[in-house]
Every structure is written in structure tokens, then in C-alpha cells.
Image (cartoon, rainbow, N blue to C red; front, top):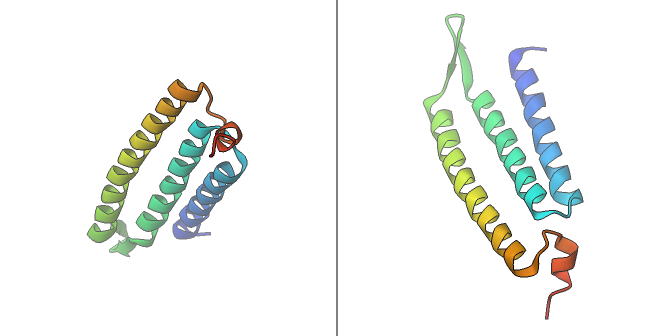
Length: 106
């Protein structure tokens, strides 16, 4: 197994773990953390696909680095927004449980 396959396997594991957390958990904070784990897996996959070997050394393509940098900035903004919405929901309803929030529909 070479380095590319190893990092792609790790990124797939991170994506599956984040997807499992999104599907199975009922706590809003855990759902946001699962989304962030999925984002980390996708970023790792993008960086891994952008690596090339030149003269025996590994170099990462500048386009892949730029995509991951923008993705990290957007992910941080999404996480901050989602956590602030979760905190406002907790202040209003005193729960993070998604099942209890679903019962509050019209």
C-alpha cells in the first residue's frame, strides 16, 4: 500500500464516520461535529489527489492547496453559524435533542 492509498483510505474512513454521526445522532452539537469530520475527510482527499512526486520528493499542487484553504475557511464559518444557531435553540427550548425539536412543528 503506497502513501496515496493510505491517505485515501483514511479520508474515506473520516467521511463514513462523519456520515454515521450525521445519521445516527440526535444531539445538535454532535451533528455539527459529524459535519466537520466529513469536511476534514473531503479536504484530506483533495490534498491527497493533488500530491505528485517530482524528483523523489512529494509536492502538493497549488490548486489543491487553494481549494482546501477556501474549504477550511467556509467550513469554519459554517461550523460557527451552526453552533450559534444550536445555542439559540438551546436558550429558547432548553434542549439539543432533534426529536423534541421536530415535535414543535406547526
